[in-house]
Length: 465
Image (cartoon, rainbow, N blue to C red; front, side, top):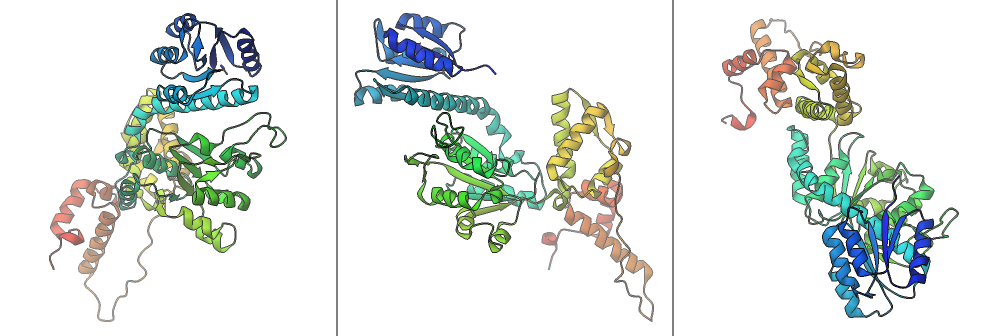
């Protein structure tokens, strides 16, 4: 992997050499300059600079002016000002004009190496956020959480109401329902949108390493800690941290997370230094946390701290009216991404998809559409294109509650009532979308529309009482 490029600008030969050797040993690409003029020429060339260490006073000019020139030509470059003549005024001026940090000589090499790592991490996050910002503000608009069913509409309404709050959010739902998508919608539609969104899967990292991942560590804190490391909470400063699968967190870490929620501060592993945490916390889980609390697997006080605003995302089997919408959304995406030309899906194939239980939820549907787009390449998806496990469906059993009285019954009237019931259930299930209801009932749309008109069927709110 290509390492970051660091520019050292200082007229002190011994310091310049010491910094070069220390950074070179760390694997960075290092270039040096002793003058403002040479450094400006380098910054205006095609040579990309990730970080510049700049002396405040150079033989041919001012270090802060050099920093402004570098950032004018390479806006993503991070800058650290070095000086033997430190003052509060200089530090304030440097940071106001874009310096990541201002450090006074003499300094410890470990201190500067730690600062370099933090500056580069900050720069990478800034770069990623800048690249993603325009896309994400579009991608994570509320309307891009796809669906028209009542369940997902309720989720969208709640997300819109709470996005700009500072409250902690607990997102629940089965795996594959889109919990991280909702978390990103909350972040990118909040006042913190221009700050980092930092996700971490608490279930994917061994418990003994998770504390370091969350809070960072200092050199020598444990075996293998060969340098200082920034944690996710520090990376997310000013923005949002997304703690996915929070239910898998160990009891010991639950206590430490509770402290962050209560006091808004933490200590890196092995460090006595307390760091303030200006971070919004969004947590997510696919397990029943209340049940975990009852069973003693999750702290009750932490649960109530996390569960300030709960958002539950329904499983796909509970929002099947969204399957055609999601299918076409993924189809268009993969057509564009893979340069394919899938035109749609037959009603018969869609009928099988309705009958599938979708244990993998939206992620499973997305994977299926991607697979069929690649294999089919063009045309219309039909039953023959579906993998075998999607070709199974169950049919409703005959009603067992129908009782025929001794005096007999009006067959046509009973059939008519049963037909009305089936049509109304299909319409209610699809939010009165006649196209989707027709697919559910295996009827032509025109036939269904004629029956609705003939029978005078209407949504409950349109009936006259």
